Length: 242
Picture: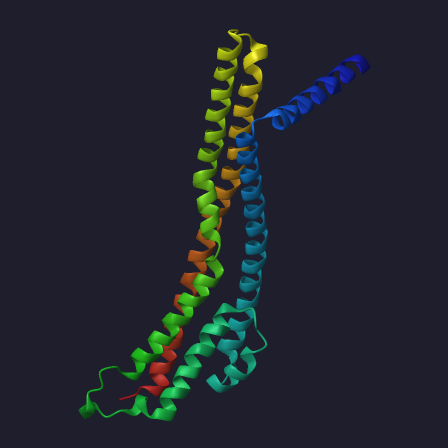
């Protein structure tokens, strides 16, 4: 058993050494390809972790704000308490709508006479303010996700470029030595396999994370739109009576 274990360790060490040697002995173009892929992978994982933290903060802050919103006695009370929820996207949407309501109350736009036939009614102003705030929240939460999508779609092709270059190097060595032995073509094939593998290692988690976060963003947008609809109904009942 000890002999078998030692042999296994020796084989593993040999594989790791050969992979490292293949990278170090690779052409400068293949090394640049590997550096690009490693850099893309590092950025992707940084986005994945920071985006998870940001979304978790928003979702954790929205729940207590909603409880406070439905239990409060007035919009003024909600506005004064909304500052306690700085991470809540719903609170930011509410404040945008509240400030628009206050502007309309100051300008008497909400009580405009029908005879004047204003080109833009007060409720349209409120809807526009809420829509703009929702768009800002969705943009904020989905920022940098396009890099995950780009990495997921381009990393395999970048790795494929390294693969093609490694195979070209292998054929060049065959032509230079007039020998087609494994010792001649192995370095180029190793380069090809390494760049392909690294490209997949970058693309697979990036694609999975992108699809996952896009689903969360869509869910967040749905919650924001639902809250805005409830907010508009409250405003219509209390501030836009005929």
